[in-house]
Amino acid sequence: MGLTLALGRLRALGATGLRVALPVPGHPLGLSGPPEFNARALAAGEAVTGCGVALGLVPEVHEAGPEGDVHVEVVWQCMTVREAPPADVPSLGEAERELAEALREATELLAKLDVAGSGPVADAALAAYRARAEAGRQLLAPGYPPRAVRVLELAQKVGALIDIARGPAGGDGREHGAAVSSSQIAARMEALRPVERTARRAQVAAYDSFVEERERRAP
Image (cartoon, rainbow, N blue to C red; front, side):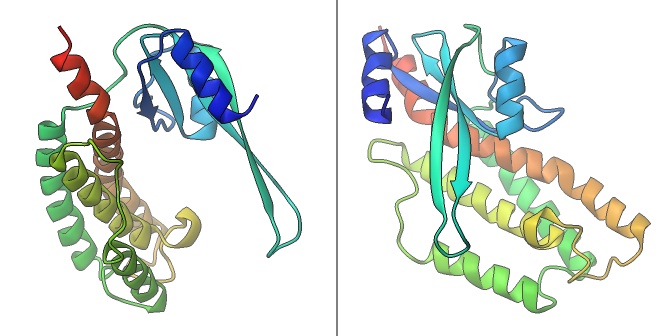
């Protein structure tokens, strides 16, 4: 069925909201099980779980057509989930504190490795991020607390720095930066891994904050 009708069906079944999950191997962020659902979500790299109903949705993206005229279709697979707190999701306050520290660490690391401002690829990535940040776009829907917007914007900034360090399409960053040997590249990726984890946790905290706040206020 279409997504609009599907969301109506979820609401009729008792869903009062949706939470975001952004899992990666070794870090089932936002998931609560069972294993079948977690495996699908890990393969997709994202999912949503229902509040008030033991159901979750995992996207399957299908692309067809020649370059420049690609048709994209997203099919959401609905599955049963375990009614339990989602894994490793921090509060907004905790996420903001972690992000501030992570941003300092990432900036210092990239400067040390001569990544933050070197090479045409890095310059283009920084310019693209600044253009998005200055476009006046609305990061979250109306009703979210201002702190959630602040946390999400900072998480995206940290994510942009990590993408620059890795290079296009999640590469190893050889095209810009001082790390040229395999051991240096591995050390850089290892140092950035906890920063990336913090940024993803913060994104989930920001997206879920509307539901969390509403549940706290519920009698």
